[in-house]
Amino acid sequence: MKLNSTKRDKIMKEADEAGTMFSSNNIRLSGREWIIAAIICSALLCLSPTLWERLEKFTPGVNYRLPYALGNDYWLYSRYCRWASSKYETLVVGDSAVWGHYVSPDNTLSHYINQYAGRDCFANLGVDGFHPAALGGLLRYYGRDISGRNVVIQFNPLWMSSAKHDLQTDKEFHFNHPKLVPQFFPKIPCYKDSFSKRFSAVVERYVPFFGWMSHLRIVYFENMALPNWTLEHPYQNPLNAVTLELPVSGDNLQENVSWTEKGITPEDFQWVEPAQSLQWRFFRRTIDLLKARKNAVFVVVGPFNEHMLKPDGYKTYQKMKSEFETWLRRNNVTYCVPEVLPSELYRDASHPLGRGYAMLA
Image 1 (tube, helix red, strand yellow):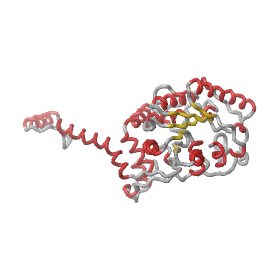
Image 2: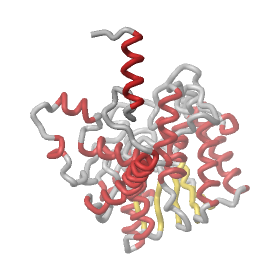
Image 3: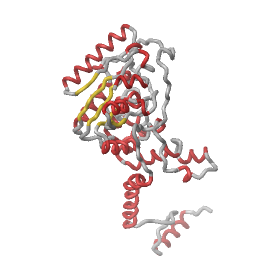
Image 4: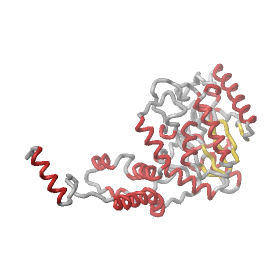
């Protein structure tokens, strides 16, 4: 029933005289109670991720690499960085060529280096699909524990093989790991996400609670928000899905077939020159970041399957390699440009097969 203004005013006046606040809310907090609520919420925000680490055991074994399905779990990557930095002398970071896209964990670059070293002193911190712009963000915001260490970092020229891969097209392009690239400056032409998405990505970098929430969603709820997960699994208890068991690192896309056997033909890549390349600029910034954190940095350029290049592209690539080397020398960065592997040891443009990793190591 509607109240006219006269009756409403009368009721409000009577409520005020009785010392009662007229409101539709049943509970109102005093100033002191607001402070207590803020303290409790802050404690939950700060302590929940730390307490969770005590519940969810994380004990990587030999040849561990972040599981393929957890490539977007930056909170877990941060945890892995902290663990690896305390256990290994040298950390090997890079994209899927370091991770080992077509091989098992015991056929990766870090595995064979450890084998030749005679002990486990190299950790595989590669992540599948990480281009230099994303890798820089990963190390800046989630790899803070990589400090005062030996770091082998890989640069894959494949990310400069076109304006699209170099993130320079004006047309929107949905690339890997957009949360990790600079959200506002410098501007990435093909990155068109809304302000709210960009802002939430920035907040997640500095508030571990939100990264932890993403971790729970990725590991236990099939990378779905809880309401969506319950719609897909209406008869399951969400608490039962939280098993506190992380996926093993043994997943892989093994395919022991060379690029020629697979029927891949030589390509004419539309290379972006280093002077104009966004990816090369982001990689240089990452080198500066690692050095600023007192790391001893060693750069590996490649591996790249030069057998796949047509003559003009081959010439351009040789010139690019020379420019990479010049910059690395001028900036006192120790580096290696490995010799090209035999053609049959490549699976595609940048991924060796198992025997190729052994030779590269």
